[in-house]
Image (cartoon, rainbow, N blue to C red):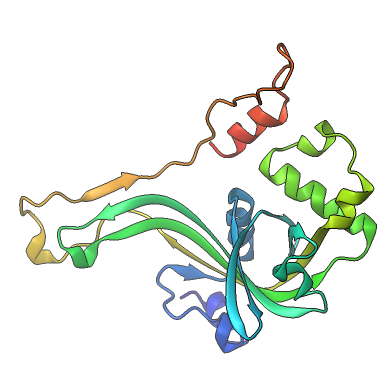
Length: 224
């Protein structure tokens, strides 16, 4: 652990501390990079006294995450007043096969966010958040779409999760085997896992000759 990480850890609440620092850090820049490269955030909250974890589309604007859903869903309506919440984004880069089952692992990049979530009620912030979420998936897509209808806006809720604490964990490289296993005839190595967007398929009712919008190749480049 670096001296900076040690100083940061000393001031953190227990729930936000990394238990094993060999792969962890509190680097906020790295946390932002992982958040910006991901597509799904698993958001944790309490509903009716029980923990719930829901996969959600999201976007980051500075030190705030935005997620959206139907205004009647639990994750939106149960968290309107401002509650503690958590979100995790994980990017899987490879399966790590060791010579023993004990040393199998995965190469990954992960960020865990803790903060306070509240319902966004300001219309301008709602639109900015929905634009960011749409453009996070398909860069520039918001401007390609028709204008949002009032009934659609009314039916959509937006939560803002202020990032109060963020921790990252990253694993890279080959398996770490025991010395007694090195040189044996058991195969070991890494199986890369790649995320890429394929060729787009137009909906059946799209008029023939309608060009693919610029947001599609922009997304394929972003998530290559």
